[in-house]
Image (cartoon, rainbow, N blue to C red; front, side, top):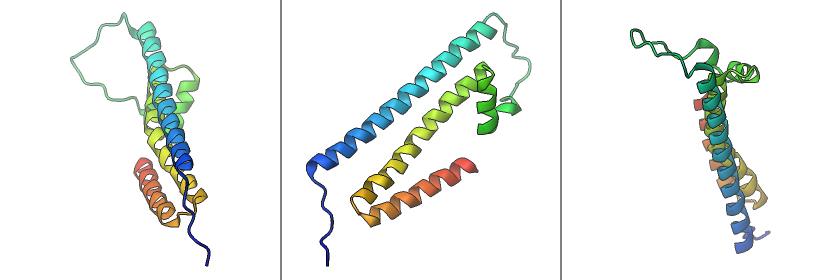
Length: 128
């Protein structure tokens, strides 16, 4: 019987460093995209006076991921801001997906299964 794979301290640290870079890049990219969208929004709509007489909800063309990305391609400032928020939401999901591969590389199948369950719950929650 083959003994279980025991990662070295350097391998553990390498995985932790990679995860930290993934999270930093995701949050930074999200902040930049939201900031660009915010500046673009102010350029387009900054001189308009707000109307507090009636409440206007989120535009219906920004309620799905595909329509948000499609509108962002056309430089819609609200869609660019929403895209930044989608990047922020996707960052921890990518972290969980990365941990599945990291645990699989270490042949730690229990944690692969747990991380896969967590990923499926996150994806199910995002889809519904």
